[in-house]
Length: 317
Image 1 (tube, rainbow, N blue to C red):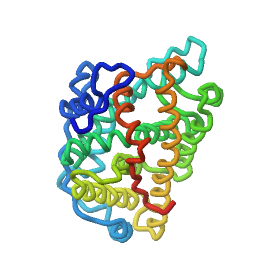
Image 2: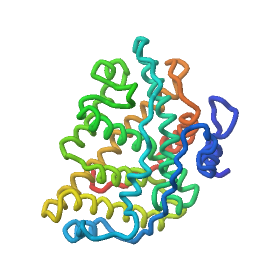
Image 3: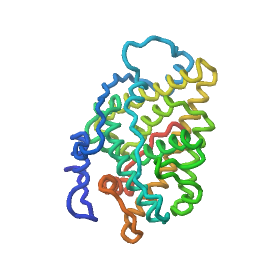
Image 4: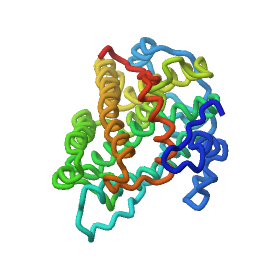
């Protein structure tokens, strides 16, 4: 396989090939988990630019009748269910227990993310290798963004709502040995609150995060990817218009939301460095990593270390 990276820890199989099989099989490897029954249709994509979106922000009429489900209504239908971490809060919190709990939750969320991506309008029209690459580069961004939304909705951005049974208050943030990163994730939730981000805006932004990092040498289906990404930029514009109406401030809100998306890249870089460090030192630190995370990290780590990823920012850094 051209993307074959041998797992140096277990030496039992090739995580790149396993992850590819997961995508091909629609995660049937984990069929005992709750399955999504609904498959969303692919969206037709049209070529637009960010500049064109700025014009749409004042021209789109949100009251126009539609004959088929809108992209945002599909995004609402395919949004993953809330997951539980299975964390035993009756035992004392320790750094390794907290980090292992987050990793075990991350493994469950990774399965959920793959299922979500495969039903995302347009995603399966990409080459399978491109689908793999985009998921490998965006999984942390998607999980953190979803965490920020849950924290905003369930705690008014005052705590980190990883799961109903794993909520980080200030004390747990300190105990986790990743306090500054926890505060960074909390700041995204605070941004949601300050900007009063609407659910449809959040869903469009989340889709753009999946499409926010690509290999430095591009994708195999780059032209199709560009069309899909620009169509989701346009969907974000429509969501803004729906929330704000035909306001002269729509372009300013588009600027604020895309600046928020750009800020995710810097936060996630720090989180990935911490994740990779604990992964490499997992035995010493007594931190557990579930199989699904082992596979995707084993895949992603060499690429990130080699500088093979390129962030698609909306604004100059």
